[in-house]
Length: 398
Image (cartoon, rainbow, N blue to C red):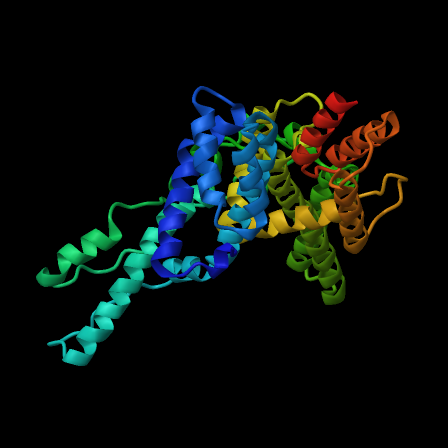
């Protein structure tokens, strides 16, 4: 058993291609338990069977065939592998985003031909990985265009590069996909600049209910900060034109700059918080805020996620890790006491020993304790399918 980063060469490329196909064709249907979802679930198990993180899950799912109970856990494991893929393929994304190989002028030597073959092989491998990564990560990756190779190499180059896999957002979306640079009292439809023509921009009030209380309060100060920045800037300009004191001019200019930085920092914080909320909404049902459906919340937050990924291709992987750490830090014991990772592991071990203890008489008290443990495990999003099966068998014996 292994982790994704331990896969090598063709094995990694082949698995990633299958993973991307599952994400594109089966994943949504399995989550919705739509028509034919069980076959998609089985294909998901085939993807998971090679990894240590999902070894027991795959074995038990195939043994008990209770797929309905395991959909949520399958989705969790798929997201974990998605995180591992994005984390492991950062070097590929860097190479794809960088300059591609170009032949030098003049007749090639044996040495330069060897370098060319190696470079083109690497680009071909990267192109295949990048195509799958676009599906797996939801990112857009642009393959830089390079000059055509001589006739003898054109066929190889075309095979490697294929169609333009990913168009960058600038062609279809504004540079600022979120609320950045939108005045908080300015109606969206009144903006006729280039950014608003290419895609709609949400008004601050359209997204304020998604924000944390602290950030929502900061958002309320944007109008004041913008007005103050304009006033200070105008005063500095007037003093400068009238030959005023240099120190006084500098003081007003500096105050204007501080105000501009303050409200642009708020815009950046909104962008980041909504991008993070998009990732969280995909994973956790309780992330949906009151008054929104899961679909509407994802639609409204996706432009911010796209913007974050464009700025940092590793954003999604980092966000998943951050959410995982936050969830671990927020786990409470059955008594309501915060637990460390070690405490949680010890508690889970005790529970497992309790359920799998041999030669124990089944009593009402034991069954009641099983039910309490299972309810607690569900509350902290821990898998308990095995325990539920044991509980049902115990009830029959009782």
